[in-house]
Structures are given as C-alpha cells and as structure tokens.
Length: 431
Image 1 (spheres, helix red, strand yellow):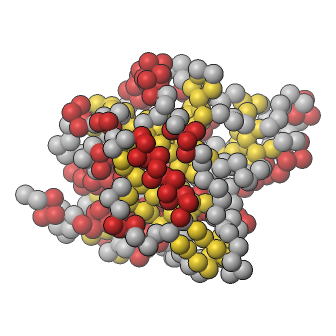
Image 2 (image 1 turned 30 degrees about the vertical axis):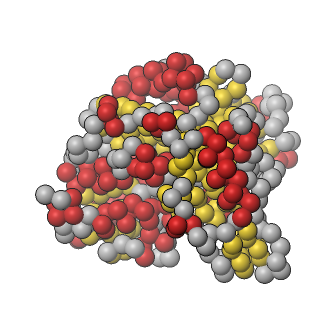
Image 3 (image 1 turned 90 degrees about the vertical axis):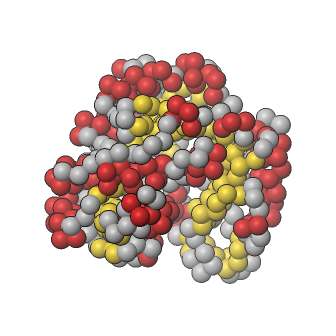
C-alpha cells in the first residue's frame, strides 16, 4: 500500500503555525492526510496550507483537547516550536494518542536551566554561568564578568535573548528575558565567541543515531543582540573529536531520560578542545537539517514523525544502514540571508534557482512589501530565506556558496541594501 493511500483521510492536528511548520504540513498533505493547524494568531502562514485552521493557542491545553475531540483527530504533532512541546505531550496523553515525548523528557528539555544541570551529570558541559535573580543584588552583580548573554529559560529562536557589556545593559537584558519567559526565569552566561556547532539526532524504537554534525555561523553585525545564524556547513570540522569526546555521553543521557523516538538537536560551542552545549530542541528544527538529510540519506524525518503520530511507529527506516553523519562523502550547507530593519522593495538573485541542481530547497520567509521591524532584529524573524545546498566536493560547495552570496541582493524603497554580510566561506571550509 502506498503511503498516500495508507493515510488517506486521516486527521492530524498540528500545533503551531509559524513559517517553519509549513513544509511539515505540505508533506502530510501529500500523504493524503487532512491537516488541522491550531495557533493563537489568525494570520500564521502554516494555516494557509492546512485543510483546516483554528485560532486555539498552542498553550491552551484544554482548548486543544476540546478541538481534537470536536474534529475526531487520529493524531497530534507539534510543529517547529520548542515552547509547544509540553502542550503536545499533555494533549496526546489526554487523548491516549502516540507521543514521542514523555513528561520526564519534557521536564528536562523545556527549560534551559534544568537541561543544563542534567547535561552536567553526564559529563556534558554547559556554558559557564553567573548567578543572578530578578532582585539583582549588588553582591551578585559584582561577580559578573562581561560580556554576558541573558536569556529566558523557556523560549528559543533568539527571542528575549540579549548580550550585555555592562550593568546597565544587563538590567535591560534581564527585563527583556523576563518579558519573554512564561515562568519568569532567566539565566546569565558567559558570552561565547568561538566555533558554533549543531548535533542532530534521530531516534527510532530506542536506537539513537547522529544524523549530522555541522558547523554554524552567526552574525556579528548586531552588537547587543543575540547572534542570529547565517548558515552552516556539513560535516563539521570537529566531527571526529565530537564522536571521540562527547557523543557517547549524549547517548547515555538520551537513553536514561527515556527517549525512544523523535528528533533532537543539540547546539554547542567549541573552544580550546572542549564542547559547551547551550541549547536543545526535541522537535523538527527551524533551520531544517532534515531537508539535507532527505537529499543525502534518503529518509524524511517529517514523514517519520507524521507516521508516528498516526500509528505509533516511524516506519521501516533502518538508521544503522541509512544514516551517516559523514554524508557519504557529500558536502552540504545552509545559507541564511538576514535583513536589516526596513521595508523590502526589491529582491534579486533567485530567478534561476529552480534550475540549479545544487540547490535542493530555498525556504523564503519574507517577500517584496514585507517590513522588518525593530523587534525582529536579533532573532530568526529577520531571516529572508534559507537556502539548502548539496555538492560533491568541498571545493564545489565553496564555489556555490560564494556565487549566491555575491548575486543575491535585497533593497529597500530608497534603494539601500538591506542584507547583512554572510559568513566567511573560505574560513568556514578551511580553504
């Protein structure tokens, strides 16, 4: 039976309606599934591609349960939003539907401070931290060494995160973090200025596989704000060292927490031979490494998660055979184009992209007429598009990245450049 016929007419409730969730819905639609998207914003992009859409907020567990009963859904799945994973777990539990998360897992991953403490127990180090609470006592403030990163414990994508170079900026950062935290908790960490990495894992029936380990690059053009991603290159230059020093610790932690199915990202800094994990996400990622994995490995994490939501099984994928963090000799990259504050009047450089076999996807968030506002600076809302490249050699990838960095242009209504600089391609690929 084809996957389209297998799920024809099944109803899947998807929590969250941001642009990054759109491809997940499109995959479900292609499988013949009746997708139902629910989020608190009526204008969320994912609602435009779903079979049905509702304005029940993703944090309204009782409302989501009532909606699921009303629609008689066959499965529930969280989209690309960390903050909704706890709701996803509770809704599935109430409806007795398959869920790749458990409350124990949620308790670890939903809050950055709890996750950090858990990692330390397994020899996985977090970023050095300074103690500070909302009272901001002088005795605590006096021990802080600047610059520091201030962030809410329960939000992601750069939301509520700021860099502080002095006490005045720190106080502002604490207020921003508290305003973005449902639990009114924040952490203050050393501001790391070193190599940034992502480690993306796939789980199936208790087996854990590292699907890709890559290097991530962030902008330094926006002082005082969280460093938004400019892209990544695959595989990481630190891959062998990661496997020898940290991978086994992570596997032990995942097993003890009880992860059996799903996908998970670890984000880490690399400095002087040490890895410092700073974030995690137990769901599909906005930067979407699964797009590259589909092109190289052959299996689609989105399809696996959809199948699990409806059946309790991720299907017949054999991770031991099909997965390969070294990408079978291929080289890949994501290229993000970030915009400054302003209104988009003209976009150039994407005209022939569909004819370029090196470009396997180009996920565009913003278009001509859209305006990047002040509140978007320092988080992923300022991303124009994410481009996904797969090449046969490191040199080919180097050439392709430079080609698109040079030819993509974005202008405002005054014909001024809106694009931030990209990452240093030669340095990234060590060419």
